[in-house]
Image (cartoon, rainbow, N blue to C red; front, top):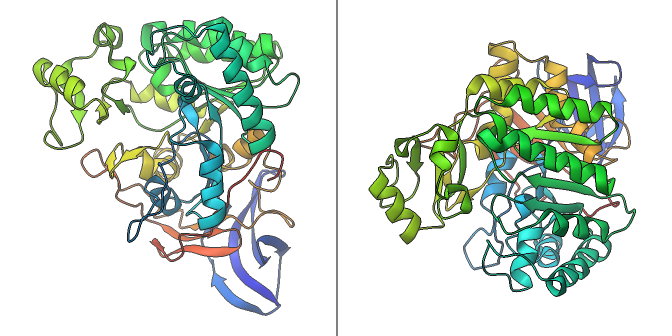
Length: 456
């Protein structure tokens, strides 16, 4: 008898590049059968006419700062992730960790989570730990040595998937510092991920730097949210640089969210002098997301006031070109990822709508993306990139992380005014073999586990 039997769903076979109608048997946390089944089950899900996909894997998101408090849910972004079908999220991106990674993963071990979590160890977090309070200052050799020790601990002892960099956020980081930190792990197979040094007119140059890091270190490089790097009129040249590097044997990939606006904290170095000229944007292109300016477009006066008085406010910058975002997502080496982050439920709609938007708009409505290719960018490709051997496909023996959705109705509902509205069309989400979401509602938000490198 199966714990759960999913009946007559539309299953994607990535190896054969086709769909089939079949049943999926689940016992404990594993898929134990795929085919035609008449065996009994404790729970039967009728998936007739619905797509039964591997759970979406968000290779680039940002975790919350978790702590246990009475009557307060310690999870924020993860609750929106699970509602849009994400079953595994990768934290610690852009060089940022919001707590020690040991503390974060141990918290999930003890308390569960809405989704499974892996994490990078972030360089900017380490710079803070070793006492570099000025983001424009170079690290000393002593501080670099201390960061190396923390990286070795994070990867070998704690199980981080690799090292992430947020170069635009820490202008003082030198190329030499990056290479030293990467080489501290020797020939160990880890993943690098990087928020580039500069965007727009300087974005292609930044992509070349990341390619060079991968070439020198021999480590695979994941270029973060490429849309907000070169989606300003520079996408074709940026993608071409990556294609040329791949042709020469450099292990480079990227990710992208399906929106023509980025979001970050207004006090960050992203908004340093000269940014608007670089983007070809105006103060009015910046949307504020928190009181007392929630929903307000900036003026020069408001911009400088908020940057000074509320530097942690997440703001939205309408600066990229939508056609170039689609061009990025269509590239074979670009995966779908949300870059999701909220501050008390405020922020950018990508954290609640990314994956349904790609399927509903780009695949179904606009017919710009092939259905199977799009799903692969959300599941198998990021799983392979992260070394998650038991995730990303519907096969016997794989983890039972599954999303069941109606292809005809799936769509994002989150907006820039209401960035956390859940999508439509997600029928079920299973995490580790149990039902987390049923009919677009969370029914169990503690099924997720901490996932450590080489232990997927």
